[in-house]
Image (cartoon, rainbow, N blue to C red):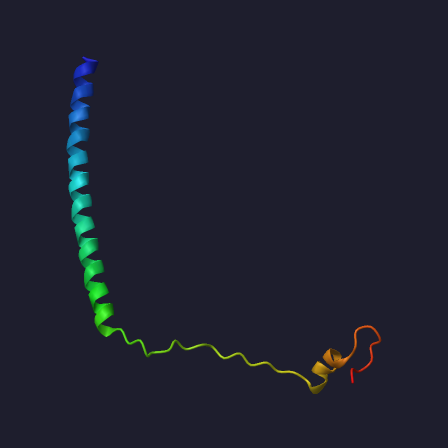
Length: 80
């Protein structure tokens, strides 16, 4: 009795597996088509002379900010 149920369950799983593999193949084909189309679009519209914009960084300093850099570390006196 249990063996018959086991075989019936295996047949159902086998059928579901075939459905899953068919879906996988179909979705894989769709992804490849999507990637190929977008790759072709990028290659056709690619402009190598376009420069990526960079964010400018502004630094605000007081006039005395660089005074410490001009001092000698040992004597704490200005370097001549």
